[in-house]
Length: 195
Image (cartoon, rainbow, N blue to C red; front, side):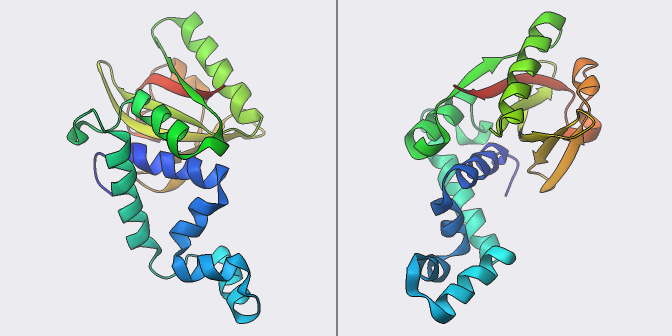
């Protein structure tokens, strides 16, 4: 949507993973009604919406990002993006099906701390739980992405909201603080872990 809503895009992705109502909201009112059990042609419309992108999805997604951004930055200037605590608070209030998340700050200059954080995040994503990651510059957290799963070669599948792509992340790049070519920024500052 813009330079401050990457956190909102990640929150929407987690919400869609945890709660089918979020997906229905993005598909639109007509598809929500069809999916609610009108049957016949209505069911075919809902089925078609799930198979592709429903008409008007982009505008609904943009509006949802704005709404989530407002709700997750209630006590923080929106122009600075969303804090990790705003992210976990929004999930707790709005997506209880995702379960509670906690903020785990990461010192990526301390190998033991970084390894522990990556192990915790890896355990969660291997169990099928998405894990938001906060990356940025050395002294400035700037961008949220979402770790979705582990590939056969050990790389993580990561949703990068600026491009809308799922990218493969070699954890060696995290340890070497060279994430920019994959995620836009070099440093890992925090992981949001499910309890």
